[in-house]
Length: 205
Image (cartoon, rainbow, N blue to C red):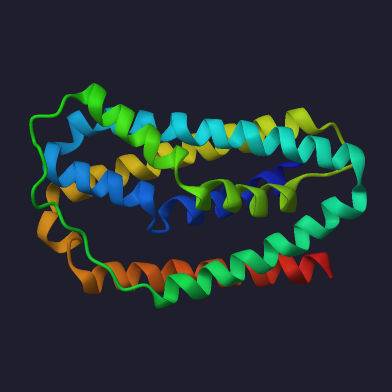
């Protein structure tokens, strides 16, 4: 994998991690309620859950590349289209965070287990990875090194972004809870998803 391809993936992974989703909500909620120190366990949990999805996606894509180059190319087109669709959906979302009736006596271990389940039970994570990974994989080169690079890059970036959200939420609780703020975030990253999808589609063409 060339440095240029990897840097392009870094940009895409940053957009993916910053975009409001279940992991983001989990991190912000924990940051507001438990503070950044205790919430570190939940960040580890989110990465463990995502690591399982990355392994599943990697195994599936590796098998697909070995069996059918045409099917792999089709997945790339579908992935680019999915990114555009996801961006449109983000534009339409209007939500706010709520931390009422939250048990503040939970342990760090409990937060970790909850966070693992958040990512494990989120089908959007695995669908997004299936859409994103093929855009940066060269089917003519060994798959395992490429998938390891993409997977580790994803986990490191997501952990850093979740830490940022946790620290931000612990300091600016009331501002982060605003529905208007979440709406603006959705529209910003929705636009980025649409742009990424369009650029990848043009690159395929």
